[in-house]
Each structure stands twice: as structure tokens, then as C-alpha cells.
Image 1: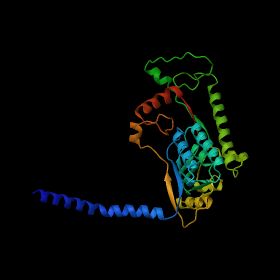
Image 2: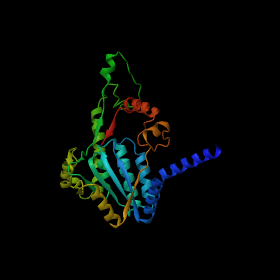
Image 3: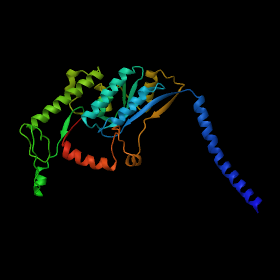
Image 4: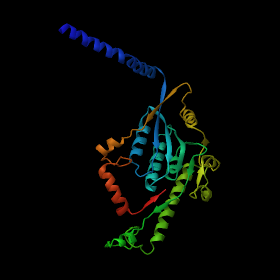
Length: 306
């Protein structure tokens, strides 16, 4: 009986081995082919959401630039914009890293949208490829400010603030507007807008700062219109962006490109292990969700958007 049991076990193990053998051969063959075929690494970083925090983007950009095996970087831009400070932080970091590593080209591919703060970032790259029907531009700045005073009055809620400084409670949605508040908001927008267009014009010399009223009036352009405005460099697809990367990074057509994607935590991992280093792009931990609700609406009150 013991021998028969051993025989059945051996048959089972043999059967499992035969079932797994084709997959093992495929894996070994794939890794062998990868090792034997010359390839060049290119980093790829996607911008798919409104910009609210620069940490994770900057972390991945630093990693790509400092890795000598990565010869170029592709930014897949599908971004409507976001907080002005975040957009400027990523733009400034990217400009700094490009200056430190001038031999590592950065190419942007726009499939659907590269607007406002998204374009701010794209402008500092070496080449922008966009589809003809994508949305590009929306270069401008605004402040979103809710007014909740009448709302809380309906529920007989009294909200007061003791302050020092005339403008300390400016932009507080639960208090009446401070005298001169509208002028203050306009000054904030105007100053941020000037920084925005000056940075873009400096990064893209083909854009004349004197003509900013034409290309930086908040208007959205199609990719084809943006090409005429010199906001983008080429119309095309991902293959066109890849071709430009090959050209700028001197990658032969016979050599494969190994795309290295930026590391990103999935939603479950973010919930279970929130990043305490400030490097997270979107804090969606339970505490982060509650914190964002209260801080965004009751503490920050308003934010400059680009």
C-alpha cells in the first residue's frame, strides 16, 4: 500500500511538472532573449490626475535622472492642471535636473489633455508630441473660493474669528469678505500668472512673451491649433514620441527600448501603509481623506490653480 501511495504521489508531481513546464520554458526563453538582445532603458512617468502634490513625481524624476542606465525619459501627459505651487515645483525640479543631466532628453506625449499646470511642466521638456484633437493650453491662473456665510446662517451657526492683521481672515469662506479682498486675490493671480508665462517663455524660446495675450489667455487649443501656436512641436502618436526619443538619445532603430515605469503604490497599499515622508502624490489614506476635507475647505479656504 505504501509503494502504491508513493507511486501516486510521484505521478501527481510529474503531472504538475508537465503542466508547468511550458510556462517555465516561456519565462526562461523570455529572460534569455532579453539578456541577449541589446536594449536601452527609457523611463516613463504618467500625469493622469489634477496636480495636488509634487512629492511622488519629483521622487520618480530624480530616480530616472540619477540612473545612468536610463538614457531618456518619456512623460505621458493627460493632465488638466492643478495647484499652481505643485505645477511650479515640478517644473522647477525638472528644469534643475535637466540642467544637471543635459545628455538625458525628456519627451512629452499628449494623447488627450495637456492643460494649465500640465502644460507648465511640459513646456520645460525637449519635445512635445500631441494628437491633433487633444486639448492643449488653458494657460492662466484662478482662485476657487466658496462663500458659505449665508449657508451657515440658515442653520443659525455663528462663526467668528479673532485676528491680528487686516487680511488674516481674507479668503475665509465662513466670514464676510474683507475690505480690499478682491483686489488682493487679483494681485495673487496676476503675480502667479506672470511667473507662469515667464517660465514657459523661458523654457520654450519659440514663444514670444510679448505675444502672451495670444497663447496665454486661458484659451484651450486643439493639438493642431497648438502646433500653429508653437505650443507643441509635432502632431502624432506614441510612436512619433518614441522616434524622437531615439533621435535625441541616439538609440539605433535596431535596438529595443526597455520602458521603465515609475513606481506607484496601488490604492490598497496607500490605505494600509500611508507614506509619512511627504513623497506621496495623492494621500488617500483614511486619515488623509478626512484631513483633506477639513483642511481644504476650512483651513486653506482657497488655492491658486493653474
